[in-house]
Length: 573
Image 1 (spheres, rainbow, N blue to C red):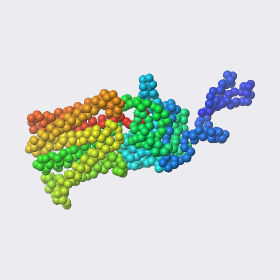
Image 2 (cartoon, rainbow, N blue to C red):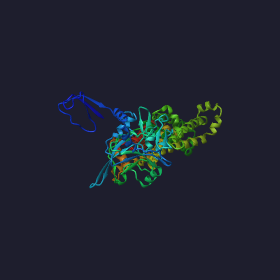
Image 3 (cartoon, rainbow, N blue to C red):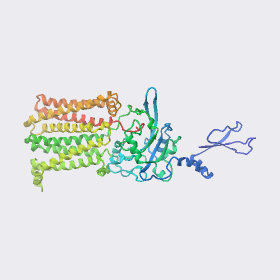
Image 4 (cartoon, one colour):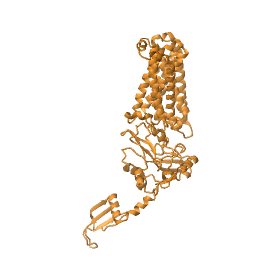
């Protein structure tokens, strides 16, 4: 900025309207010449004047030193280089990125946070600026179900294709550094592209130009260097391992930091997003798969029930339809939901969508075939249709295929979260939770359906066995989840300790509701198993038990998301 002061004529300066300039410092003006007018030159006006005077090239060369003079060669790519000793945490880079990219309110592609730790006699506190690391193997690209990411083969810059995005937000879970940000108003995800248009024209990115200490620069680095750094574990303490995605950002000074540094807000995070549509989708798909699969097991164990598979099949179809409809509401652009299977080669989300889509279609065929074979009046009506006889013959094969697709769908649901590499979503934890929900709600649904069935009184023994299974499964699952809360007292810092602390802290009311509903459902199932009850009470109690257990599992799925600590860079919340 350039301030021009126009003073009155003085004896020392007889020229009228003398121009006095204060630029880059202060200049003392005579007291007898008070300014009568002040003009402020904007940055554009200053640059224009410098350009006309021929002095702009010197300033431009400063920025040219902060970006490569040539495009990356074979095996190289552009990367951010951050001098941690020069970063003061002023957030000028954050402001410049926001303004230059025209971001919406509350949206940011670059963040500044703090690491702290060290020893009592030598405490360490370090500010860290970060943006997209333009990884050598970007997880956002491999996880995206619609191919909305591309990594430039020339520059290595990872770009997000806004037009292709459906707003599923899976990339925000896949990225271990929380780089992609969901823009709710636009219904899509957006992220840093290293101001690639400016780089293409020899201009520095906004964050590079704005840093007053030149702590951020762009360098052309060999991709093998990112691999070597990941193998050596050299990136930044307190963040996800670089071996997951091979980030290209170079943090100068990180190698001399203590390894016990943690983000300043490590234990003070806020509950995450609930993802309510996903809560319903996961809970209901597992309920429907469990109900259908266990009905086949029951029919195999008790041949008398082989003719009663129509009701569980129809119930499972209705529940699956509700689950699939609910999942669409999770998308920022639901009209483009059909694109979800485009990333079938790399994305578990695409595989999950395809598996449950096929499961629902084959489930409808199984319901129709079951109606033809054992549907009474409905079966006689459908029997007049072409291929009805063939459908009845193919019923066992259809049922096996349907159950297999459902199990594959649940497996894909597990892998959707295991693929994020987050320790609290590890295969053994997520697999046991999802499998437990499938078995528990499947058994509870089957118990309620059999209790309301016309032959419930004839198969009191089967109801007895089902109620006992429900009570045992509920007790096992509640015990497993309660055991995970012990991590809150662990001495070692870990994501599981964060989860337990969140469930016993800000989310303790939800945690109580989850266990309360589960205990109620288990108690009702135990009452059906052990207490002699009037026949008129069996069906209502079975339904209430199903609702209680379903509410408990739905709440548990909400905690699965909201208590999950975000894998991110310091200050990336």
